[in-house]
Image (cartoon, rainbow, N blue to C red; front, side):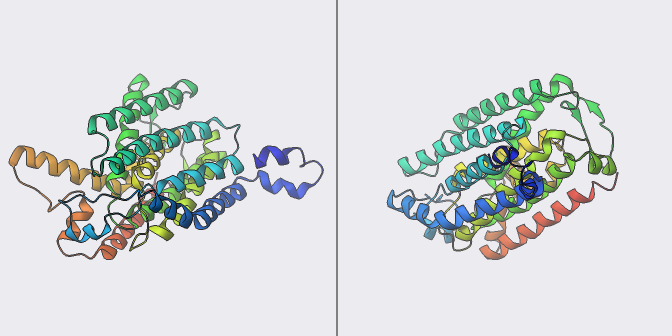
Length: 359
């Protein structure tokens, strides 16, 4: 919106040209979401508390978490709200990748909202039945992937592997089911990582800053050529979205840090997880995203291992899944667990970025 408004003024007052710079708009998108969360976060939390939209804590989890029962949830609403406002203001709305990303963001947010609403209404930690939740995610992912597929180019279906400059395989139509699985898997992996005060928000800040770096260099023909990565012209605009999301997560963390005043809820975790998957598809980082979000992979892997082991052997590998609860139950304090997982997330991000030069 800002870009279109100042387009007509560039020829009359050249300093206005700063508003066309991607780095400028990305930085101010982050600042916008941060300020929106700071200014309105407290009021939204009070509103949620007035409506008695409180979290129901699972009884089979760590007993120390029971005191959190009733803490306002669905805080992801003000993450979504701030990002949408920032993108309408600072994003280039003529760019199709912005609309695809925003559509995915809102679609997965809607699924999360329904799940959270049912949890509150039924006073249960269950929410939507697992099959219904997955059905909604798969439906949204299929629509998004088909849009990317039919509006893409010859690069859309090729597969890049870290440490290799050239694509190793053109998947053709097989790219569609794999892309759907990636989006749904990433959405659920992020969702499983939301269980401790500040844990998910901190990890998402690291992931979105990493993605902002990747989207920026992917959208620059000079940088992408130098690093030997695919050049996706329209992907650069996603830098604005990534930094807007990072700023929103910083603002949310202000209220979500231990002891949390509000929880993100599925409305936040599903939307942010789904959009991470979509950005990885657009920027051709389908495999690298497993490194960038390495902690999310460990979290969902711990759940899968735990379920399979119990089904086949009637034994548990971890004291509790997801993984962060296992470490709580072996004696790590909640803040220590969170900070150590943040450190691990930072290490994964560094490894991911280092692959750009080791090719």
